[in-house]
Amino acid sequence: MSGYGSFARFYDRLTANVQYGGIADAVVRYTERFGGRKGILLDAACGTGSLCEELAVRGFDVIGTDGSDAMLGEALDKKFDSGLPIQYLRQDMTALDMYGTIDVTVCTLDSVNHLPDSESVGRFFERVSLFAYPDGLFIFDVNTLYKHREVLAQNAFTYDMEGFFCAWQNQYNEDDGSVEIFLDIFEEREDGAYDRFSESFTERVWTDGELTGLLDKAGMDVLARYDGYTDDPLNDKSERAVYVAKRRADASLQKR
Image (tube, rainbow, N blue to C red; front, side, top):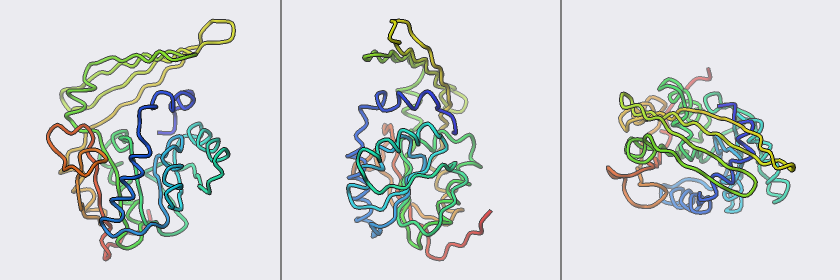
């Protein structure tokens, strides 16, 4: 999770279709719906900070954490341009270390799918719970097995944009539902030649039972499951499952 060096430069153009404003609006709705406080918000695995910017505009005091220096560098450039008071910290999502309590934690765009095993997911949930305000909210999403099997699958995608070209290839594993993703990016130089950059990573599938069990172990209860960042309930053809959980007021965890 600490890589994505060259990939960070292209990330925003490759995810230009992501509706960060819509995600931020949903976070506000869920926070109000479930009695959360619109105070300090942690965006774990914040990437290039696009969602942090939207949440800060909506009145949250935002902290963004990510394990990649390159991603955070892009986020800091946006902060410089916008002037928004966002704090960025280089932290792996499984080793969060906050200076105080957090009212709302978010983790979006299938970052939880990138964790290598259920133990890592459990550690991440425990760190979220440890620093959550009593009754604090945790809003996160995961890509579903349906998306891995029916959408990503063995498919290949291409992005042909001004100045660069990206070839995206997937390898689906029927045994566990995981998808290996391979990206080859070709960036045009001034002389017309191209530099090539390659990135690869694996997205794993976590079942509802696994996630619910790990949240419970971390002292959190699931309040709702949505079909993406909508108000529609999760269904068997949802591509993105969004969870809203709350830390139990009597939850007690020790720092590791």
